[in-house]
Length: 116
Length: 113
Image 1 (cartoon, helix red, strand yellow):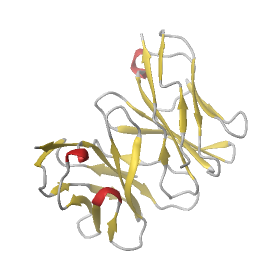
Image 2 (tube, helix red, strand yellow):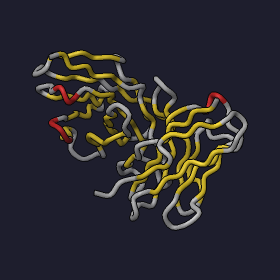
Image 3 (cartoon, rainbow over the protein chains, first blue to last red):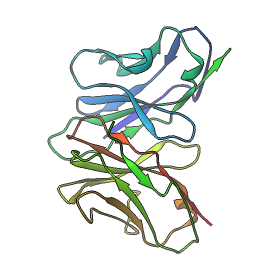
């Protein structure tokens, strides 16, 4: 079984400041990890994914995340926030198991607020 | 760019009625999923579907739910007798392989009154 914990339901940063959204996971087997973004009244868009290759993963819109096995973390960062980054961000995990179309387990989400 | 499409975008139904939510996954994808998001809560996995059968389902996916791929393009979620607590945004997703990223549709907002 797997689970995801996102610390902070709301994070507020100033435009141009560093964005850090925290995600910790629990999985009994090696995981695939994902970050999705949801803009108001829209679906989920993939930002980036970790699938056991490089531990530092770069995604779209300047976001990146680092897989740290020792800390069971996959925090999302962006060096400089932009007003258009305001959205809901979801961390998700999928256990790497043999075969089957296993579903994703999502965290509760973090609402990112950008202050002008 | 290929995308997952869902219809309708919003559906209102009376408690006890049956609803069918429709999805057209990306054409070369083999794995299909339904998720739901109750307002203000996290996205929850309902069911996955591969090779014309359910691959995995969550405890939420009880006997009132069913999925079907009636033809080569559509993937449907049926709720047999809707309850107030079924009100949520329902997302369809598809992926080309197991373990790869899932592409999500825009969702269908279901309101049960």
